[in-house]
Length: 91
Image 1: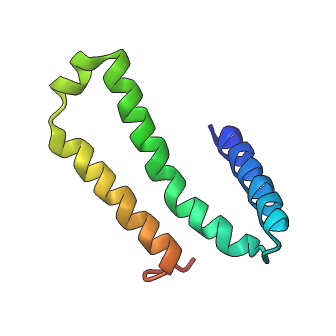
Image 2: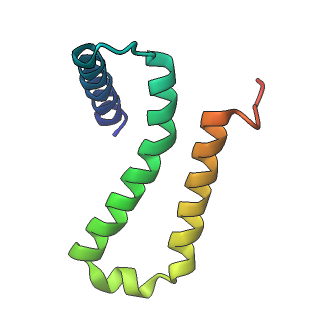
């Protein structure tokens, strides 16, 4: 899964760099990576839940909806924190 995520990030960076070059804009790779790392887990989770809903609808109806929303809210807060850097964990 990590390899797939890394490949997806590299493809996104490559396409964004090419798009910025076509438009004649400056491309800030560090800022783009921060945005992608904040948004991609939310999109992957949403896609996984939608896929699970189509493939196994009975499982989705068994799990209370507040669990899905709690996980989604946690991912959103994590993404915002990752992008803005409100809370830093030091080693």
